[in-house]
Length: 327
Image (cartoon, rainbow, N blue to C red; front, side):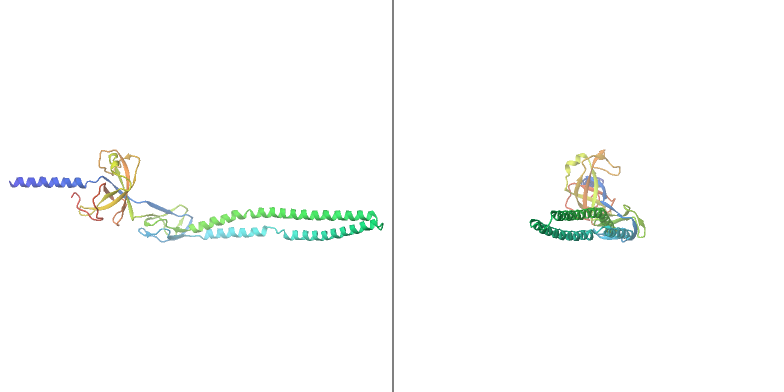
């Protein structure tokens, strides 16, 4: 009789354990990853400072280092000096124009006198007190003065046009130089190493005192506050999930237990792929699977590369706690 009782108890215990194992079995599994940003130098030069360490938490838009900008400052000064010299190459047409205008004023005064003399001679001719030759001489004089005035007016226009053309040719170099200054000023701003996102420094590639090149990696950073579980499901499981669906994420803990987290599905692949060798799906016979990404709020215990399991219909979750595996 005792043997039968022990046998029944053993069978019942095995049955309950099997039921709990099936209850705890996950629908998918995968590993945790994070979106990483590799911060590179935007200008070449010597790294004067790089105030970061692996594990440092940085804020977005903070200045974490400086590239030597003295060569850029010298280039800017050289371009600005060239811009200043352009003004010395331009011509001032005002003195020449003023001289011609003064001559025109004198000639107009002479013209007025000649017209007055012409009117007087015409009256004398009517009184038979002057000859027509005198009138002809005055008309010739008037014509000469008028032509001189016309020539001087045209000369003013020629001087203004010639000087304007020459100055335009010189000043045409000003705009490209101004743009060169703007480019250098932009490079000077980029000499400050600006952190692009809030996150944790994952890897540091350079040190202060080294000479870097544009595009060379300085450090890698990632936001670990929300970590992503990349898991794989079979085609038959696609109908069980949707975007923004909350799921239960299980992570191995000590003493044969799980830590439970709540996750949100943020991405479902629209293309099937072959099952990765390191991934086990609910149906291990499946050759083709679909990748999904699940955002999980990190309590500081989740790490990149850590293994995680997913259940699509989670029970109420208490983050960071859980029962023994198989319970």
